[in-house]
Length: 499
Image (cartoon, rainbow, N blue to C red; front, side):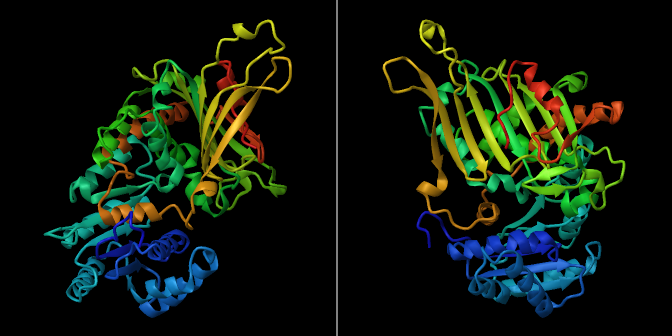
């Protein structure tokens, strides 16, 4: 076992919606990776709950075939065998009280056999519309009572579709369980570089003194995808890039980049500082037209392969006005960041897959070099790459060798894979382990969720009022809509290239 980490305590993991894609692609491979690192307890049980017609034996066979097919690079047969021996299945509808009665009996049986210690995580790999109902059923069956053991529930984003629905979901959940029992999952926070943002800032005297309006010109946060809507057309056409990505993924990156130092790395201390950032963001409905851009991809070529237009994708309405790209300029209205714009963008079918935070430092005075051949200085960027090729790069200026003063931009590049042995990862290992350990630092609190939706709600309202007239089509495989270039050019700046 890794001496730096304690093995998780005995527990059961109950997955509602266990026959879905999330379980076989991400959850089971993550459990196998935790097992490989000797972080799973021997007293562990996995219970799948779904409406598909399986018993435990047939579910083990079906799930094993799919896991080894889609995640063979992450899962060893021996690890899957260990998991499958502890895997059980309950068939039923999520609104059927009998399912929860049978689940309660199974959990008592495992506890009596000293297989779980009575501890349990209920993971809702289900459509968000049934989150509240399942948690009410769990509480009604007495399955959320702790009584010397712990009971936790994990919900995956999206946490609502707008501010009123997010507030309603939180009210429904908190009516039957305690806040400390709720783990709101955003898998982006399981990525090493995301967690390293706090370490980079707060463990290095080199960076934190410069992390403010006096030294930073602006910040760009990019989450670019080459994939199109693929098989998620029905969900995506009702959701769009804004709701799908901004209140969760992008705002998590924004919060970690802009937050004040917490008093410690305890969950509530960190989450309190993150919510302060979102509370300080100001975006009025009348500013949306100027500072927010939306686009939708048309036909094009991505990675040398032809890509059909979004409106031709499966389960997408032929005349859909759903955005697949959004960019915005936000200001964090506090002492540290006054006057520093944050530019955020995300989109599908773009030129490259790239998630990064780029911090642009203010330009050095040019007057010293006015009598030399140097007509301009290169830009100073600190770039945190989240994916792919996790790492950190620093761009600065250096003298070109020779008798004349010539300056060129150079780059120092740190890659995680060059310094550390990266274990196979789905991004869920850290989050599942933290949930088992009761560490909620990387999970959102109710006020975090609602603060994010408060920023986004004026955009939703403004778009609803004007209709699709400002929706710009962009070519698949491009950098995105031209309106996004104009958005940042208004401030005499430009985006870093995606491709």
